[in-house]
Image (cartoon, rainbow, N blue to C red; front, side, top):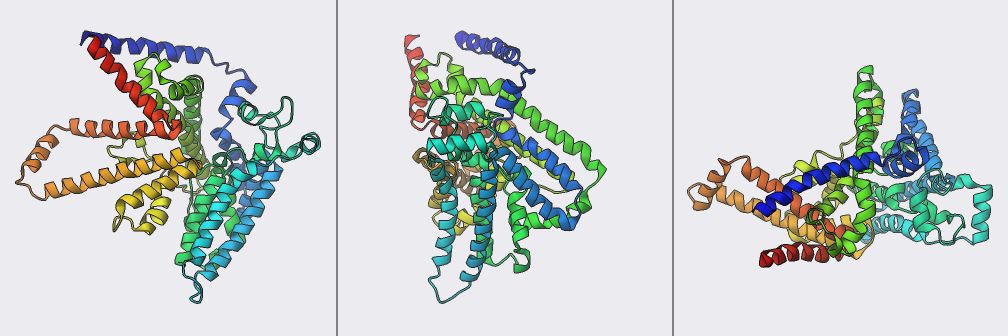
Length: 492
């Protein structure tokens, strides 16, 4: 017992030293090294949409959507290159035309009933997986070098060396000194260039077209392009639904007021602060130690780091992603636009069902409404529906088997969660039973039962991410977590 207490007490000085070292190592004056290459290298690029929001404030309501389209394309052109901005515009126009065809075909009775639906899924799938295919295209080196020398503005900023440079160089430069390949630089990550979120938006849009809930008068090309070109949530969400977005744009001017400015700026500042915390305190551990953690956990000396290492990874991602959403929400508030919230204190969840109502809310609700319920929801084949829905979430992150398996595992855990809830309801329906008496006794011990539920929820969610982040690491790390205490027990 004394050894355990001493080991626990030793964690706090180590943690304090780690925090001090992290602060000491940061060169805040290094504009390129810290601010551009580390802070602005990923999700904080949403800050470049702040001038866009201020510009839209000056437009009259009837010009607002045109302004959103033009400013969104300019935003894309600046960050991702003019080639990608033109690609995005063309893709959106094609999707709009396909949507109109789908709206007509889905009402016909003289064709195969499932035909339009399968066609819609094919369009959505090709739109998403096509970006992975495009990334593999290599232009002849002479062409690519000429384009970089004479038309650098068609390349994204990272290829031009302004920011994103470390990641792009590490992953995509195939010949020393050769310019980045255009398609590899542009399509380097569907979750950073908007194509992943575009696929989910199309899932929602085509589903509502099938239900005939969007009037033809609302399905104009300008409305459609404004929905897909609104800069603050274009790249990485939140995922706004078509009808709600159009309603907000129609009425946002009525909600603009000077009283919105302080909370809007506060929300933007809070997002920047969270990004700094993620970059200073979490990124070094993720960058320097997590590769070893997943591949060779036996080399991790600290058992505390072995157990909580995956927490560091997901906390870093959460801080960066929620920071993006905070900044986007702050810009929206300036416009009088009530953007959907994407996170609601997920780390306070006391069940997995509760967690997924708090985490990436816009994605969770769309997949619940248009995939899970469409498959049968809670009416039939609940286990299959949950596993299939979450497997789709995994594949949406990247078309990898380990992510599909993680999704199936998460679906199974949610099924167990639902089964437990149903059982507890049956127990409560028989107040004279022994289990009901135990339930009432536990309830009198609050908040201990709630804290226990919270700890179980966090443990199962976060440690399932060993499969998400590391594939086979879930076996290696779990084995190491079990092996060390067993050896310690038998040796002492």
